[in-house]
Image 1 (cartoon, rainbow, N blue to C red):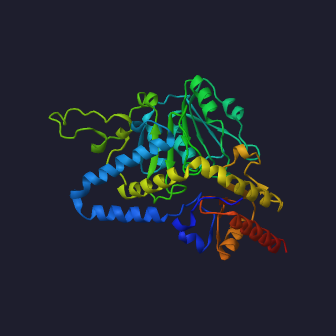
Image 2 (cartoon, one colour):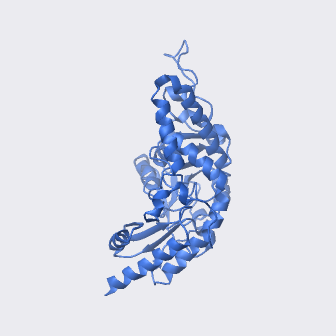
Image 3 (tube, rainbow, N blue to C red):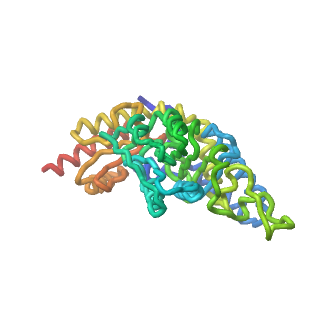
Length: 379
């Protein structure tokens, strides 16, 4: 079950501890750190290197679009997934009685963004998971003529549940005349992600993509773009800022680039370029296939300890995250950290995440450590 991906050399910090918390905070690779230095060297020369910096942005947009199998002009960079979701919410035309459908496995940003629309008469419809599972019909059965938008995470931050039916769900959403949005933050860089039948997709890059904070990948389909009235505007989102009539009118850039109102986070863009180049060489589909046995082994091991798993047993619904419920979650997390095993433990949950810098021995060590901690708690 050895994962044939040469990852430890690019993540030397993983020799110091067992890092299973990528779902909260990804590690920087040596490539990403060098990319940050490359940006610093370019920036240190001021405007002389602006053309070079802009070129890196263009290259990185192209890489991100390739990752999503999307047209290049439909992809751009915002600060994070939350900004993207808010941009979508604020750019749509809402009416009294409109409905937004989400699930109870969503990160708070994919709740608050839509809940805020309540003051405009928009109703939030929440589909509840059953044992961590949400099936296609669970969502489609809640779509009505009032549904204006369906917004789901490809992979849940809470349970690691992956929705393997996004294309089919998109069909049903479009059949109802609604917009289909996807948060791919916990998916992009770890499992294959595409935008077929997706209208709007967001993904923060500081988790599975080895990138610093302050950068999110945003996709908007050409069809949706025509229906949106961008909620923001600025000099970076127009093709020419020095037109003779600039005090009277302006036009947006073509495609999703119109959503970027000012200078983007170039340092994180440099790092993202390095990460996407590396992951392109590895192949995310190969990565997912290679790590799937480790995820299954981790889940089986934790289930064997009698824990209540949030992560579904069906491999089709699994991703890189395994979560379980426990009233002493915080205590378990602290005890693991004392053994140099880093996970996320809060909100009554312990969540671990398997990425390309993890291996089978670390999965064994984690499960064994949890078993020992549970024994101590019980006694």
